[in-house]
Amino acid sequence: MSRPETREKLMKVVFLLAALSSILALFLIMYFIFSAGIPFIKEYGLKAFLFGQVWSPVNSPQKYGIWPMIVGSFILTVGAALVGTPIGILSAVYLSYYAKGKLKYLFQSAVSLMASVPSIIYGFFALQLMVPISRALFGGTGMNIITASVLLGIMILPTIVSISESSLNAVPNRYYQGSVALGATKEISIFRTMIPAAKSGILSSVILGIGRAIGETMAVYMIAGNQPRLPKALTDGVRTLTTNIVLEMAYAGVEHRQALIATAMVLFVFILVINFLFFLMKRKDRHE
Amino acid sequence: MSKVLRILVKLSAILTVSIFLITVGYIVIRGIPGLSWDMFAWKYTSENLSLVPAMITTIMLIVLVLAIAIPFGVLTGIYLTEYARQQSKVVIAIRLATETLAGIPSIVYGLFGMLFFVFRLQWSYSLIAGAFTAAIMVLPLIIRTTEEALLAVDPLLKQASLGLGATKLQTIVKVCLPVAMPGILAGVILSIGRIVGETAAFIFTLGTMAQLPTRLTESGRTLALHMYVLSSEAFHVREAFATALVLLVIVLVINRLSTRLSKLVNKTK
Image 1 (tube, each protein chain N blue to C red):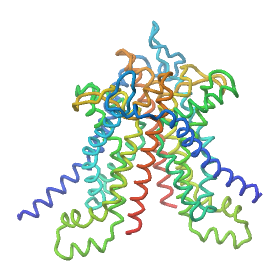
Image 2: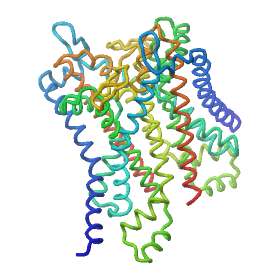
Image 3: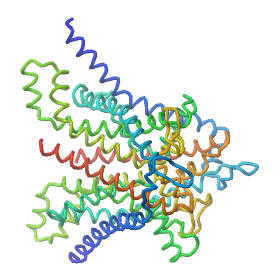
Image 4: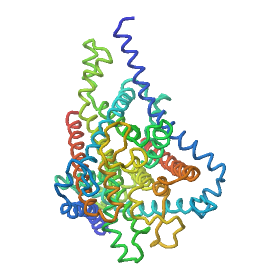
């Protein structure tokens, strides 16, 4: 065998090994999170952990019920989707069908820049500007479900706008022309023909946004109040699965730390489900 | 009906842009008064919260992360586009893995980094633990942008190279990679942006030491972590705003650079 041929073969193996690194990384992450989380849940009881209403890791006896955090994550995610989805889809429609030339470029740049602002800055911005406004409007500390939902809605906006826009752009233009030729106005054509045709792409943008909202940590940590109890009103503070980890990891003892890792495991499972939904949507998109 | 819809569309667009302008404008307006030369002093002391050590730490971290992530990311991209049979089981597994990695929240990465690099490998809170954690985080991004850039290379170029007798490897290294370089670079810059803005993954891996680390096994804090520490102390609001401004400017510049580069790719296509 001549040398160049050996080199070709060798490099092929190197490429393959590198490619397997992401599988290895994923495996390691799952192993470390699950191998610490599962024994804890086994010992504490799955039902008591998932549906327990009380989280008090430092009092005796310790209680590790994460139901309030599951509910907290759920509420904030739904809130973020409610805020971000309509504005996001309509903005995507604007970008796709109304904006032209320089204005379009500026708008696209703004959306892309919005996506790159770090969450710590969003959190600080909200803490300094939105929390006082919320306090004036709703009383209390201003750190509540409404404030956090609005901020998360803002944070997932660029995701929804850019992915919805590209799926709207992917709809064949003849659909639009056909609709207009049948006498429909521009708006009716967009909302009755183009948006339904781009449905699965738009839906996957929302799913991706939801994934981002549920995983967001630092911004929520700064403005959501972080009380580990079930909220009774929209003006109550909440704690999410992510913030539970950041808040207590620094001083957690052995069992407490395991409980926090188990919290991350639950979060991980939620993310896997959301990823899977996204994967299905994208598949459907390709087949249509 | 049409009119209402048109108004709603335009209102939403205005709202989106206003939110962006308000966020940036607010940080700029509150940040500028806090800026002073002292903030850029060489040393960090408890009286003068200089951000220079944090900035240097950020740069060191970026270099480390890229040194780990680029080889793996680019080689994976090459494998997926040039060698693998599409739809083979290996490819599907790799794609599923990278897509899952891309969706994992940064706090979970942070926790994993702490459990594996900090505790198991006993690297303690350190630059190297933070770098490895972040490298896994940006890996999917580099893989995807490399793949896209390589797919955009004109097949004629490749065929010409092969036709002239070059081997597959020579073609990839001497023809495909140079042509795809701007696209790969765009992905790398995007990764830099992600590293600069990240906090949750670093708190429990890199730690938050204020001094400049002199060794790979020492803790430090990036600019974003510095801002996190300042913002959690109620009496450093002024400094926190100024740091936020510096951080914001860096991130926005990085974003523009990346967009420019990826435009370049689309032009050559």
